[in-house]
View (spheres, rainbow over the protein chains, first blue to last red):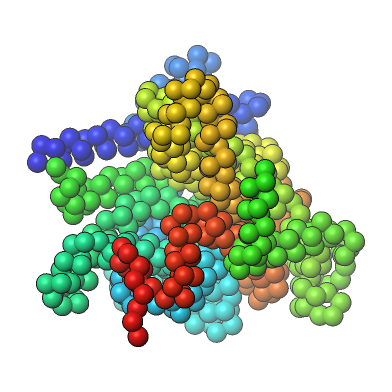
Length: 328
Length: 303
């Protein structure tokens, strides 16, 4: 038990360090750029803010005249107080408020489709490993690599065109219809669901192949080991062999991959949200890029980084529970 | 040098690699010859959003420009940036990964920590904040791609260097008094070439995808014609809501075909250089392509 506490603590320290690196990058990038970052960043506010308010905002970002180190501590102090500055494109809302309005939609869309594609892909992967034959393999692997070669958001464009525009099965944009009132009522939930299907299907469709292939490959290498041969020799039936002995071990590298792939998949989900005008982080990101809304951009980077780090910590805890070897 | 030529020749005998090389070469050729094949991609040639016809093979976009010309010209800049960034990514990755793997100890600890942190940071948002602050243009895209892409290749190359470092031939050269530089350049590097080549190809695929994603967001130089800006203008001109699929389908298919061709070349390199697959190939030739891969010793099946 003690060992596992130390393990989690070490991982936690590592994620804290990664978090600090992200904050430091966020702090340094504007200051390493040619020109005067403060005036680029705050040029947009001219005419919107009184000079005193502008000075207060500059202080939030640590753009004071002091040395870099003092600016840095100032910046971190404000971050820990939850002060990420004021958004330009959603003026005068604070950045944190804007981000949290989109966070739930991203968590809902990306989170659920990620889990569905992971579970579905792993199950199909187990099946593929068990029923391995040359013909299926030589068809499946090129097909999956061809699908994986398309950009996420381009697949989204195509699906939107076909299912949304030509067939008119699904709505083209937004997370729910304008005609329903948000709340816990049937028409709202139905509307959210019909808007959810197409973007979620896109995300599942493009990421499924990766989970399938990795689970299949893990399974194949596990099926070649001695203990499986031994279990086969004893005469366990297929189901027990497959799920109880092989799949549980084969799943571990996939779960590690789950944490690793999270940042990558989130990036794809952000671009997919943009195609569907889904009001999550990706859509906010686009707004921020279009409006040169630097406080919002940097806020989004930090929130996404922190959610990736937190999910990795959760993955570590899950691995600890699943794999007794880490505990020893 | 001789072995490199031999390797390249054997690539042409590998089915997957051959197809990949043909697709890639035809894209490169067409993009280089674009000025002789089509008119300027930025000229107004006809009514906007025309469907494909004999005059305009891929139709016209929302600004009345020829989509076919845009696709060919887009290949030029997109592929150039992708290959250049792929090269730089592998260079940075090989240097940092090689140093960490070869020298080990404290240096390895620091570089490994850096690698692990960069692997965790979400790529797209990081790319976006970098690209948003830098002036838009090809140089920015390359800097951003290298900054976010090096870590994965550094990790792969590091672990391979660590394998070689403790092998007898390296230890022997060290006992003979060879310098670290000579050991790395003469003993280790040539053996790593297939891995470096496949890293380069992987980095180029990443370079295409990430570049297109960034430019799609509007973070590239939108006055240039690239595959990314083609998609950016397609969505900006409401191609999705007007149903003009021809403004984004050719670009997307081109991106996928080039990425696929690079993946196929990578499969080919793997089949030719991976010792496990080499022995598998020899065995399947000996046994008339019929043996059970699940068992440690290949045994011929009895019908």
